[in-house]
Structure formats: structure tokens, C-alpha cells
Amino acid sequence: MDSQCICMPSSPSLNPKIHRNAKLNPSWEAIHLRKTTICFKSRIHCTCFCLHKQEQNSFFTREPNARKAKKYFSQLREEPRKVAKKKGTIAGAVALIIGTSIGSGILALPKKASPAGLVPSSITMIICWAFLLIESLLLVEVNVALRKKKRKNEEVDELEVISIRTMAQETLGEWGGTLATVTYVFLGYTSMIAYSSKSGDILFHLINLPASISGIFFTSLFTMLISIGGTRATDQVNQWLTTSMIGLLLAIEVLAVVSGGWAGLGGSGDWGKVPATIPVIIFSLVYHDLAPVLCAYLGGDLTRIRTSVLLGSLVPLLALLVWDAVALGLSAQSDQVVDPVELLMRVKWSGVSIMVEAFSLLAVGTSLIGTLLAFFEFFKEQLNNFTWQFSSTQLPQGNRLFGLRKWWGRNKSFTAMTMAVTPALLVSSTVPDAFSAATDIAGGYCMTMLYGVLPPAMAWAMLNREAEDAERRAFSKLRPLLLGVGLFACCIVIEQILQDILLFGS
Image (cartoon, rainbow, N blue to C red; front, side, top):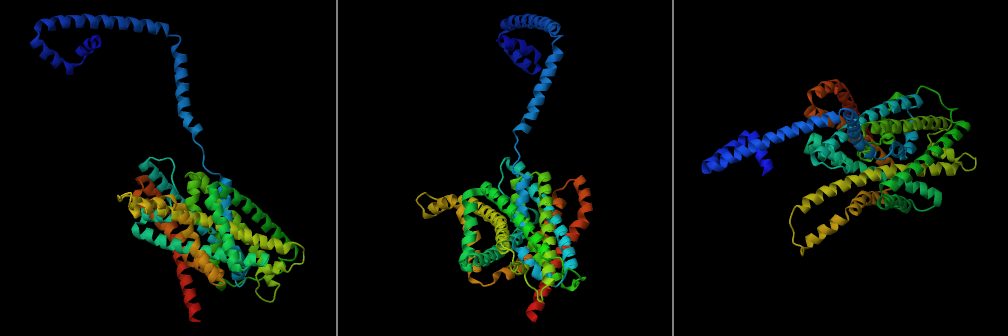
């Protein structure tokens, strides 16, 4: 009651209540106001006296206390930085990129590049590398922007992988999502067919097991690694395999140079044969299906993602340039165009043939890990979206559909992996020599459409729609770059269509 008496006179909004009570009990009101005034004044006096004393006593201690408070709040501000933990490592991301890029494409490149010659094919590789680097950085920017937007809207700390389909749907609309889905599924299956087919051929030479059975065994091995071991175990295995593969590649290239691999280099080459090499070069340098996985793996840290992409893409470029030079040097010494793998197998030094076969197997395996991991995450995301829509319908517990939905929710990972692997194994085990055709289709059409045409279109749509005024002014400077890479990708697709038409016509 004392506290109410002290506060009431100081609040004009409460005065009408006092006046209404005064009319009912005038005698009580007069006594009450006198008590209130006396109490209020006495408390003001005591409060002022105490404050005066407190100021005198704390004159010498105020400044140290302020410093302590400042230090305390600075520690509070710094505490989240100590708690925040960076996801993934740049080394792991670089290993994923290298392993995905240096794959079966490097084994198919020499035959395609030999008619063009060293200089034209090398310049084409550098141009394609720069083109693909720009495209990958655009994919990273779009993916990280969508991750930040989703985190802001949903207020969650952990995010699953945002697939290419979701990126296209969020930026380009339903038609973009549909185009990305169809192209990505076709690309994933053609890549898986190429890897399974090539691994079967390599294992057939090593252990004399039928190619179809060898391909199924090899693909199933990495499928179990991803399904059972998870991302962490897969990352560690992939780093070890990538390191071994790079070591074997360097050893093979040194042995090839020592055995006269550079001797046959010469001549200016034929620029007219360059277009036929572009699909295989793109297939050999592409790692863009890992972009969503890398963004999630590194927690959306743009600086670390850009560093990983740059370093991870440089190593495959250098490896391809040296491999191309060695391969064309060996091919020039032969009377006919021969795969340098076969030429190296003819070297009589002990262990060289085993090294070449082991490198080929590691190249296919590391590419298979990256592609299968991204393909698995894509199907997993689509199944999660489908399950969310399916779970919105209410079903009684006794219904069969309720049991199916419950089983589906527990086995989405198994279903996603089955969808990613089974069709590719069926095609690679039944269609002979599927490697070459799958490589041309994947590099010439699927990869160019998905990682050449769509990224600049997505970046254009997102920045044009969501950017602020300052970002719009900066974006206007990027228009020529986005138009340039988009038109370059369209030209590759058109040129590939014309080549296929001429091939079928002949």
C-alpha cells in the first residue's frame, strides 16, 4: 500500500481514480492525501540523502566499476564468437572438388584431343576452366543467398542441402525448377552410367571379372560407404583416395616423360577439331554438382567456399594440361591414335601397368563419390518435400496408407540411394561400351545446360528481383559478364546439336 501511495501522485493518469474515490469518502480522502504527501516527501528526502551519500562514497569507485562493466559486456559480445564453430574444412572441400573433377573424363580426353593437337586443346582447356569457374562462383552466390533467406525466415541453425532444383525454382519459378530437375536427373544417371561402365572395364583387366559384375560391385561398395559411413567417413576416405590418385598421376606423368613422352610434341594443330573436344573437357573439369553440398559442408562461409573452389579447380586443370601433353606426345610416336593408357601399359618397366590401372580406378572412384553424394542428397531433398506434402493429409492409424507413410518416413535415405543407383547399374550392365556415349551426352548437353545456361539466369533473376538500390547499381556492371557466359554456354549446346546432326546424317 505504501508503494501505491508514493506512485499515485506522480502519475496523472491515475488521478481521476482518486477523485472518484474522494466523492464517495471525502473524510478518508483528506486523511489519505495528507499521509500520502507526508510519506512521499519524506521518501524523496531520504532518497535524495541516500543518493547524495552514495555518490560521495562511490566517487572513487565509479570509474573502476565502469571499466569492469565495459569489460563484462565486451566478453558477452565475444562469447558467441568463441562458441561458434566452423563447419567442414577447406582441405576436405578441395579434396572433394579434385576427386570429382579428375575422374573418368581424364581417361577419355586423349583420344578426343589428339586430332586437334596440343596447343588448340590446351587453350580450349584454359578457356573452359575459366568459364566453369565463373559458373561455379555464380552457383555458390545464389545458394548462399537462399540459405541466408531460409535461415532468416525459418529461424533455424542447421540447414539441409539446397539442391539445384530448389535454387532454380526459387529464382526462375516453376519452369526453372522443372528444367533443372529433368536436366539434373538425366545428368546424374549418365554420369553414374559412365563411372559404373568404366570401373567394370578396369576391374575386368585387373581381376578378370566380367565387366558388368565388376561395375555393380564397385558402385555398390561406394554406395555402402555413403549410406553407412555418412558424410564424415566419406570425406575421410575421399581425401585419402584423392591424395593417392594425385600421387599416382604424378608418378605416371614423370615415367611417361622419362620414357620419351614429350618427344612427339610438335606442330600447330587443327583448330577445326576443337569443338569435338569441348564435351569431354567440360566433363573432365565439372564439379558443379557439388556446389550445394560444399555450401552446406562449409556452413555458407563465402570466403572459404570461394577459396576452396579456386584451389580445387586449379589442380585438375594443371593435371589435365600435363596429362594432355604427355598423351599427345605418346600418340604422336604411334602410327595410329591410341589411348595413352594402352601406350603406358606397353612400357616394360615393372609396376607401370599396375600403377596406370590403379590410377584409373581411383579416378573413377573419387568422381563416383562426389557425383553419388550430390545425387543422393538431391533425391533425399525431393523425398523430404514429398513426405511433407503427404503428411499434411490426415489418415487414421489403421489405414494401410498410414503404415506406408510411417515406413517411408523411416527409410527415406534408403529410398533415395536406391533411386540414384539402380537405374544406372541396369543400363551400364546391359549396354555395351556405354562409357563413351554417356560422356558425350553428359558433357555436351546436360552439364552445359545445367551448369552453363542456368547459373547466370538464376543470378540475373535473383539480383534483379531482390537486390537493394546499391546492389542494383553494382549488378548493372555484372550484366555483360552474365550475358557473356550465358551466350557461351548456349553456343556450346547449339554446336553440339549440329555435330550430332551431321554425325547421324553421315
